[in-house]
Length: 448
Ligand SMILES: [Zn+2]
Image (spheres, rainbow, N blue to C red):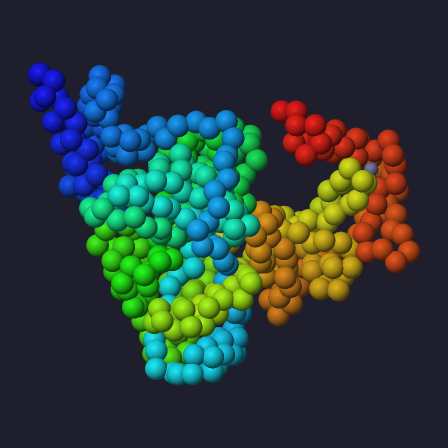
């Protein structure tokens, strides 16, 4: 092939691969096999290596190698990146509705209800229709430039089919399946596990080497255009449809409703649907759809007044106590834990739960063999919420808190007015080993 033909082929490959990215990662329907896709990508990368001067800065190949940074640079948001106020029940939502109506002086508007994706907020700017940069929320005013990692998101077009200059905001997340795959791999390597997909997504976005992000398959949903009004839109719902038309991935499980009863019905519907979704959601977001009303309402120092986040209660699951055992920390503090039948909570399998201290077990009357309710509130180890005494069959055994340390056999002591129990033997192996682990850990000395 001569040079002209090869340069033309670059253009062709860029267009074809962008189309495939859209089909596969936004629409979940691909017209090409993985092998074929890889071959085309390989061909593009070879041609780009041969003709660097004809390589587009936002070529789809830039997803494969977004680059390596030595440090993150700061970017100031053009508009503050606020977080939302929270609602925990229908009463909170009704109070929000009242405030909105009274401040807006009208009840003639609709609410848009969207899923609250459990990821991390991201701002992306396009200039002349080209991906320009991506910034984390940071403190709301200044965030970190993580363009190199966000560029690796397959579903995110690096070039739009319109020469717009605008900012979009959304949530970057890891699909449940990816989270499990990554944690499984970490477990095999003896590495510390991520507590949840959000945690894993945050850890990935903070990597200096974009190869990690590419390998981990981050994804994103885009849900907000800060300058929508000046771009000529009058409804938030229209801006989401517009993002769709630009092949920017939005979440389709959104619903326009007329009042809080309809909001609540949809929340109930999505609460049921939640376990079947391929990504984690931690609530729902309710926004006034009319952009002029949004503008009229404005924001407090921290949160916009035209939107609120409804948070799901922590997921609770029933399991069964197999055993209760003690672990000894470096301060000598002895913590009771429960080994339980493995259950799936918030997307991860768990076989242990925290029991906190002796009083906790006694007050809740948690016995070995008991059916228990466990809850996960963000930590990797869930906690026992309560026992279910109505399920006892007579084989349950009340737990007697040991008098001696399970590691050194030394006496355990509980001091006046304290709820925790301690191994007071300073020679205790558990204390020394734990102390060494702590001493060598990242926090203390950063030794691997
Ligand atoms: Zn001990």
